[in-house]
Image (cartoon, rainbow, N blue to C red):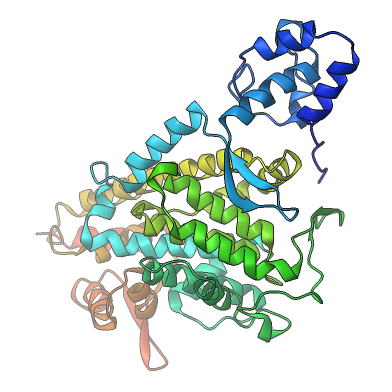
Length: 453
């Protein structure tokens, strides 16, 4: 990946204008008000803006100078710093405010709660499914090579991981579960270490490094795996304890006179942990886990049901560029924040689409059954089985996988499946070991039709 070109500094441009021997041009630029975005409303980095067609006869440098001045006036500086001690900062644009309002409505409000999630009977099914999706995609972003289907089966059947990739995914799933139990706690180095231990169990070359800050002997750099180019060199190991404590203080302190929107704060936690790279491995997964933890802490309950890593994985270069744009433009976090807001919106929209699709499928299954004596007799878990059986006629169901998918007891799951096989004859039951597995019969539709009133 090519590292973006660093923009000219305001100081360098002022010196250049002074050398021109006239204040007329500078006065003209200082009087301009072009806002913080380009003519298309985008918060553009110099790497792209330098190729744009500037308005009002300005040069590319003039255009950048005017925009950067506006950004500096709007910027909010943080106590969090880069490795040189220079503060991180960010702007909140009108487009960002509109998106944050949308997120407040859809991720924290109760009015627009999707029916499948509002329904206590089906809520756990979708929560388990979402945790599985995030566990798989977050791990694959960090190099896990297991396919989605194999990983999903492993988690649903609670099978022990067979290799490092599967272990990464299982760890991520357990960390996502742990976040819900930790959301009421203040952020502390110990909590971060605990999450990292869960995320890296049995995956590190040196197991003692789990939940431990890297030291001077750990040479850590962020590189592009395609060409080996160094993209980021994290802060020195000797500064990490202080930096982690500063990050915890930032998370825990809410100053009403210096309010930072919770979604923005969650994303800053994500960025800084990844920027610091305090561990020998698992930094990206830990950073994304912190985002989920803070969103849950601040009441953005719908975030439990979405996978930001799934969206990030669709365009990983843009994720990396969001970091690089920030680092090459004076620690301006706005690039990263805009990217992550878009990611979160896309993840929520994908969830809404998925829920609408699943609701439609359930309704179609109920319609198929409406003229049989099965109408009103099957619970939502059994309808889900039939829905999948009609779509995937070669699918095999187990009691353990069904129990885990719907977060129910073993006995309830067993009753669901035995009822479909023994009482209604809609599944075929076969002995496997000490238990049973259940198969979709080739003539399922005929059997459903045969169950008439």
